Length: 202
Image 1 (cartoon, rainbow, N blue to C red):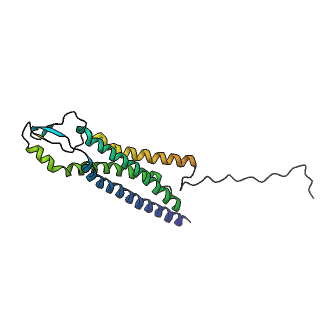
Image 2 (cartoon, helix red, strand yellow):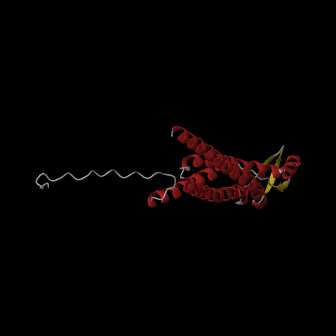
Image 3 (cartoon, helix red, strand yellow):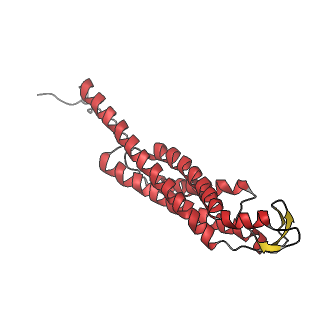
């Protein structure tokens, strides 16, 4: 009996590790794909070169539009990955009767943070030719701006929205009492009724 429980526990851990690795890889891959999307969608404002790669971005809305697009893209990605990761663990837990909520939440949150960094670094790397133009521009020249993310705090948008979406879905499931993989409490055994002392015995 103990051997069977040990085998079942080992298979459950192995299954959880495989699912976590697949979720991590899928979220990180999505981040790698969204990097070129951010590079393609984000507008580039006209800036004034100050020499030695320095620029004066100005105060127009376009100067901050690139960061705005980054926030929108990663926020939408966080909603999608939070929903898909929760539904994936919900389906697997329902089939295997194994609670995967916490492991997948931790792994997917880390993956979302890595994916956000990939969006940033890949988008900036793809804008390298425009950066070369800025570096070689003379002071006072008007050139197209380069893609950059000055407020690196925006990197937490994806993991934050992901965890929020995941937690909201788990809260709804908790209210509905339909969390798969969570064993239901066993009903307390009912005691047999005691015989009435005044009852006549044959």
